Image (cartoon, rainbow, N blue to C red; front, side):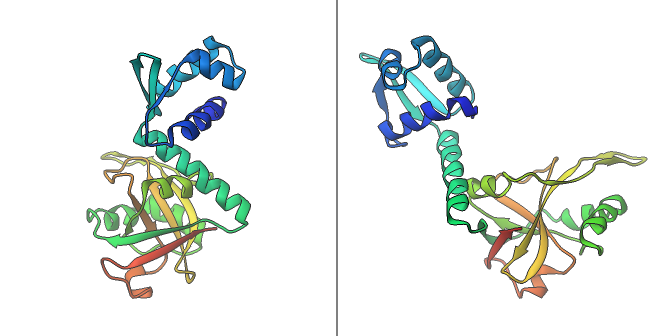
Amino acid sequence: MKEENLGLAMLLAKQSSLRGKLATSTSRLAEQTGFSQQSISRKLREMETEGIIARNASASGMEVSFTQKGRAELESLYLELKEIFSGKKFVLTGKLVDGHGEGAYYTSLPEYNRQFKQLSGKEIFPGTLNLEVEPEQREVFTSAAPTKIAGFTDKQRTFGGIDCWPCMLNGKVDAFAIIPHRTNHPKNILEVVARHNLRKKLSLKNGSIVEVERK
């Protein structure tokens, strides 16, 4: 969402309770915000185009409601502000699940491994830990600027880059949360790599709950 539209989004959220429909008009919103009707119309169009809100014509002017994406973005903002005001680092909680089985192959590629070794000082264990998380929490966790693993090309194909966030698992083991630029995982999955076999190091099995603290 554009930063300049956040104020209007907050007003709509308060008046619609996020999950309801708000009957309003551009003239009414202009009075409440101090913006011109033209500015309100533009902001609403932009938020609708971004998929933040949905609009329908009504007898009073229009009905506005937040989409799932819009609610997720506002919740992400709330969690970020909560982290700032509490002074505590954000901790994401995830459930260990099976992955696609491709992590070991990709993390074993020499060029990826070389770059991870530069970050951690040692080679990483071949494979990724796959955590099922709330998409909104993943969005907050990954809102900090990532460390970049560069993509590369070998004789056969091109491999994409990887965004990395240094973290600690269960307050015990240093690791990197990663999101490959090319991935088949949905937005409720966060992959983690480390120098250790994390399942053995932390005595984890499918269904185990893992806390990921961003450094």
